Length: 406
Ligand code: AMP
Ligand code: MG
Image 1 (tube, rainbow, N blue to C red):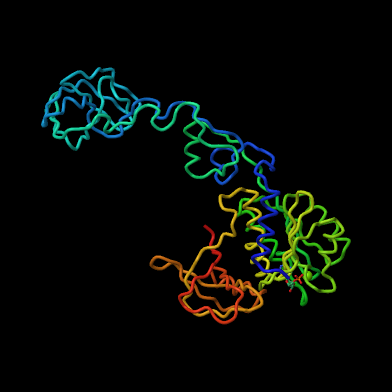
Image 2: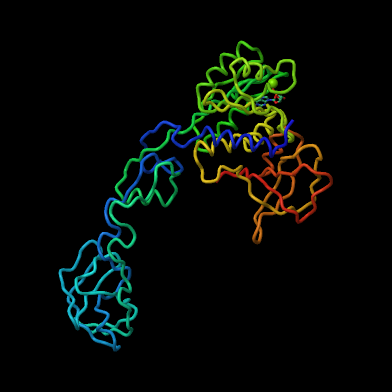
């Protein structure tokens, strides 16, 4: 059994080694669908930005020298609107009415805000304030020069990038394909969600929680259904999963007589990096790889499955997706009530978290153990209680995973 920290080190190291950003094949997606995807082309400015000297205030385009004495009265030669330049030349004693985003007329070198002017109909304006040269405008190419590299291949596409790509005319973008994540539930007792379980059966819930987690993380889930607790069936289904980028198997990794998942992993040559972690729930979590495929055996109890996914699968997916920090995705909160530690294992348990004042406040929630999905539904987070002697006191800081979707 290894510590949770060590297990995480193994996981992140394997992910960093194998999850090079150019590992995934490329596909073209529409701009609207590209948020969070990995860009697979370099993006250079398709022109100067701005493309012309541009007003950034509504007011009057002037020669700043004309305003050395204020108030000053200037003759209005015309109007420059956004999308429609004025065909005027601003000479001493004259100006041009101008709107934000409109091209600066020739001869003018500053914009006075309309708030600092008074109209003198029919064609003159009184200017009440002086301006500095270049005030109220943005020079051509002040933001970008034509051909300048703006986004490099391998970068994760974020909100501002969507706007940048749109402004460069990229209606379609080349991105990495999403990592394909095969999901296999195992257990002779499992029936599907639409079936009625007999006395000794239960419905498969892990396939659905895992599917949802994979989608939320930006992966492409592939449900392989239910594998039965015999080597023949597991061989067929695990083999299918080993063709994908990641394989998640739930159940069948404990010490039970019919827990064959690790045997089948071994048959297929899966290199197991760990199969027992000092955490609760989630102790029998298995992590390894087979060729290019990351392989996980997640303990079958529904809460354990979720905990192990958050702790170990998510960082691997984040590496494949090159999320900026391939960390484990926890936040920090202040304990509102004492929490007892376990000297042998890190505990990751249901909790109630809320944001108050400047920080998150958290307390553990009542639950009945690692099969208690209803207990997890009554909470909104998983709190990490470190492996230690004694009790964490109110006011101490802990890590947590939010269970609220964003
Ligand atoms: P196992 O890890 O196979 O020993 O399973 C541990 C517990 O989790 C058992 O009570 C199983 O019935 C339950 N379990 C296993 N797989 C699932 C699943 N897909 N959905 C819900 N419960 C499960
Ligand atoms: Mg089982």
